[in-house]
Length: 241
Length: 241
Image 1 (cartoon, helix red, strand yellow):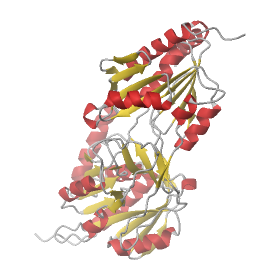
Image 2 (image 1 turned 90 degrees about the vertical axis):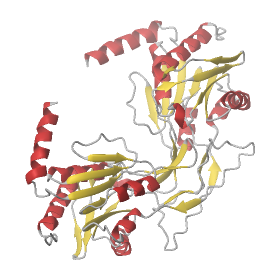
Image 3 (image 1 turned 135 degrees about the vertical axis):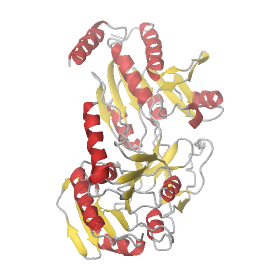
Image 4 (image 1 turned 180 degrees about the vertical axis):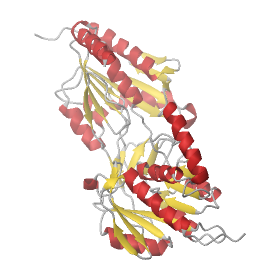
């Protein structure tokens, strides 16, 4: 409890005098779950750890943070507006409601597809054991929508790419395709232990080129990214009065 | 640490003198995850709570318990052989390895189907956003295999049925179809809060008929079921020498 009070004190001080004071940040994190029926769903292995760490690192520098989170087992961080959701469509709605903001960091592993229909009752096995037809349809592309927003595009949009092969080429193509400013790419092949793990090893792709960051904890990645956001924020053009 | 030592003491005492001393129990718990590719999978909302509670209740009465668990966020219980796995096929292999046993309690929500193929790399979105074809194939039926085992059928096989409608009729049909001795059925419709929750409200279906148990904690359901197993165990015919 004392620890919480001390933390709250520093977060309040940062909110007033930190390098990100006045900055409104939106962070998405975690997987989305896409239901087939009341008990079954499509999921992915995102733990939400990197996104939660980034939300906390931005708040520690004084940002006003909204964290839109898919289903994860992490505790709600202090001094952050946490909005929980389950599906990509719910996440899209919450992200759009969180606009306007200055920075959007889209770490969530949003499901690319969802089952076309959600059965209202549990799908039963049939006597002949034939499997149900499972038709997938594309989910909304939240990152592309943020980047292309006509009236409220955030000043800085940072995308994430989880790849398992030819990481840099895929990630550079994704940055251009989505229209985001920076893109953080990582290799989530099972042997890396990154997805769901405590560490990350990322590439930061900006219009200036690709930086290769060494393997470090997700907290350290978050702290360094928040520093970069602070550099961007301090160099921003003055807002029109 | 003192609490753990006291618990270990009582579990050792029970193992020697409890009503289930000498009984070998196999419990399955949790969901299974069925991968589409290195990051995506099919899942279900089982938390594993009821199965873990049953494993603990049986151990508390002196049983020698093997718990085969799908991916859950629960801690490993004390004094229980815990075997973790992810897919239905892995669970099947671990269950068969755990035979022979006297009692099998199959609480796991084993996925009925899995993707026909698991892609070795993350499936990429295509430019035209067409969704990948997802063909499902049936998983092994672990409960039916246990019940029909030619040489090592457990003396008592208890199945579970998670239903969302016409629970009793579905469950009675399932008991006969699988060939299990008892079947515990519950209504996992989202509005009941049972799947993933702390409480359960079950029907116990035996050859003698259907009992309706009131809503209670999953620990209490486990304790009552373990008592019933103890009654069965004390009334068992003597083993051939």
